[in-house]
Amino acid sequence: MPKPLTVAVLAGAALLTRRALRRRVRASPLWPLPALDPPISGRPRTRALRLRVAARETVAEGVVQLRLEGADLPRWEPGAHIDLVLPSGLVRQYSLCGDPADTSSYTVATRLVEDGRGGSREVHEQVWEGAELEVRGPRNRFPLIEAPSYVFVVGGIGITPVLPMLRALPEGADWRLVYAGRTPNSMPYLEELAEFGADRVTVVSGRRPELDALLAELPEGAAVYCCGPEGLMAAVAERFPDVRLERFAPRAQLGGGTRGDTAFEVELRRSGRTLTVAADSTVLAAVRTELPDTLYSCEQGFCGTCQQRVVEGEVEHRDELLTDAERDDSMLICVSRARGERIVLDM
Image 1 (cartoon, rainbow, N blue to C red):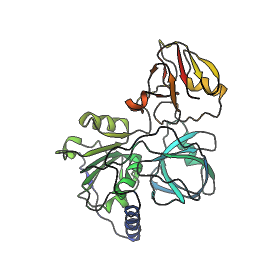
Image 2: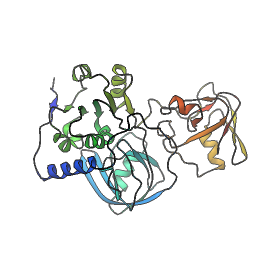
Image 3: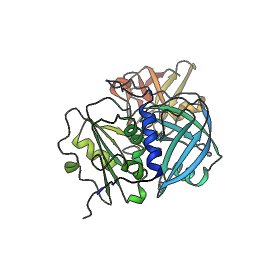
Image 4: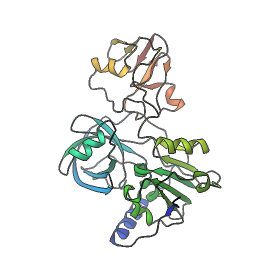
């Protein structure tokens, strides 16, 4: 059985550049972090940006990084993501993995998913330097909070939202990272992670990480973050129920109607319209027949783009995202349904 590959410190010009980046991030207004979880807003910024792909780079086997340039871009904090509107019209979410202090560009990376829904393939095959893309956001449902210590467990491309967190933590912070992947060549940003030292970063390739051994004696009060394949996140959540998760895909295909669903009415209060949602359809599909510019993306209940405020009615929530507090007065209209015969939305 192969042993975990522990990162060794690498030398070279890239080392100095990335150390400078970390110093710049730590000097930015991101620190100190809020003592409590910041309020989460599921409503995306509606102002769309038009950004140019200034640089495209292959940063690992099957992983492409894009640097999108603009001017006076909205600020963001570690854990945030943006929506990219691809040339075909597909909308996909990508974690920001650059420098939060840089208001002139956004950096994202995506892995080619052979059996995916087409977004990653379009980026890899059709988005090149010089292309212009519509961007929405940023939004953050995976914020870095203040804690006495941190444990990060990531798999593959799940490193992207975590990398800015590691850069932002102060020099003396107590943290460790377990980074799993198929092979070292398929794991982006290994060189930069090596700068943090073997005492902080453990890389496991070619097999599942032995979580019980790697995360033994978790410090009291530690904040645990996980992003990666569903199997990895489920394993971490089983051991640490309070883990903070960032999903790039839903646990299951939630889609539209399922067996036993019934039709119901949805009133759009501000628009003055009442629509019927068929048993085999979704609120989103019905709403878009009348309001075609309604924002949406994943259609599977995990990205939050389609979140709307509920004025009246009881909701059967089927999403992967909303907190209990958010479910009191809002819903993701791509998957959730009325529990009764009617709901009223603030649309």
